[in-house]
Length: 210
Image (cartoon, rainbow, N blue to C red; front, side, top):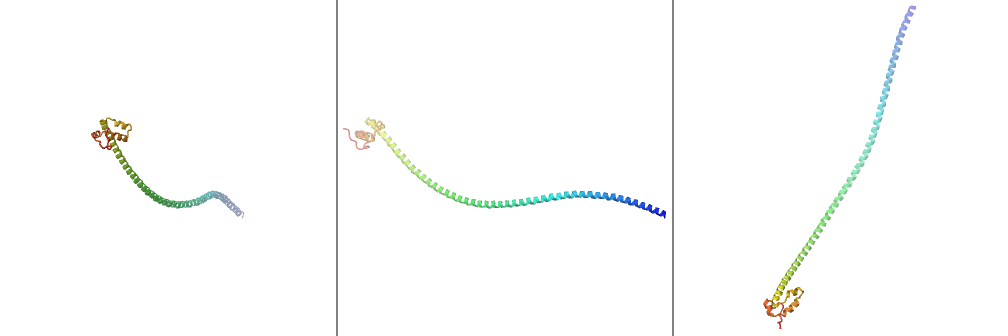
């Protein structure tokens, strides 16, 4: 009996030693596992925080992009309205310019036609005036030519009278002698002297010298 009890005690001590060893190893393994789990949880928490920050950043960027898109859409609509208004204004201005250009073209054509008519009238008047002046100048030239011929004839007559009568008629005329006085004087000249120079009857019948 005592031997059996001792053997049981030995077995119990061995079992207790095994159990204690197992418990110790289990506690160590559980501690290691807890540490690993804690480290893993800590790492996961850090990763989750990073992911959360990234998600918040992405959401903020997405929100800002959405706001920018809305603003861009608003600006684009405003730009479209401005373009539409500008196009309508440009079309209206183009139509007004076209109408004004057509009106100006008609006015210019009328003005040119009027100016051409007035120019032709002025040219005709000028041509008529020049023709009239040309006729007057030709008449004046003929009269001057006639006067020069008469003057030359008178000078030659007076020179001939100089030689026949002995009076310097050319000098008298140069001093302002008039045809009337010369006519009266010639009438006192002997007709035979006038016959000698071919002037009988030039100043009318002469009175013979007494």
